[in-house]
Length: 278
Image (cartoon, rainbow, N blue to C red; front, side, top):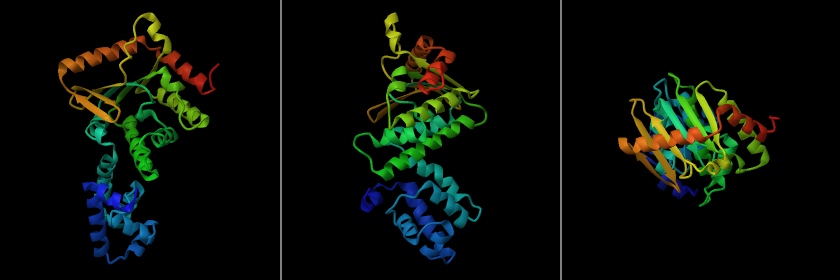
């Protein structure tokens, strides 16, 4: 992204970081070069951050907190806000809900669900999209996506179910090596106590039913013990709270789960794809 475009695209959080960093730098009597040296960056990088010519990176926020924060935690607090700002617009309302959720029931197609993607898989998927994003934008999106994985280790334990359409496992991104790494990551995720992973087989429709034919589905139990549904397609999204509609989607998810392979057979399928099964 060109520097002028970066300035125009910068959101309120990034602008606040730039203003605070400059003010706190000047208060300490540091030049941009001196601050950069303490943070492990060039003076030009500090200038680009302060003028919004270059997006502030997550690592730079960590270093700003270390050098300028003085124990206030201000730049640490800004990390989440900056990450949210960098998410695709259609995802921003849902992202905080996902991170606070007590339970997630996810049906993924046509790609591995973002919470379960490796960094390499995520980068290959995003870089190959259309319109083609810049390298900087791809890195922003990958960083934000990987940060979402924090939900797996939160307390109290969050229960996360993932049903993958089998076509997801057969659709390749990046390279065979990237796919093997992704399969192995799914295997590791499936071994977590709070994760259940299943696969909806390609031939499910031969039984006369395929509840997953209408696409991906996210059913969320919020931190207030209510249920929501999040749907996304072609860069558009909808967050559904109407109890009657949520009930219908939850019932559809239950049918998808019933039609999927059980967790043991699902894991065996992924292990074979990873070259680890018999």
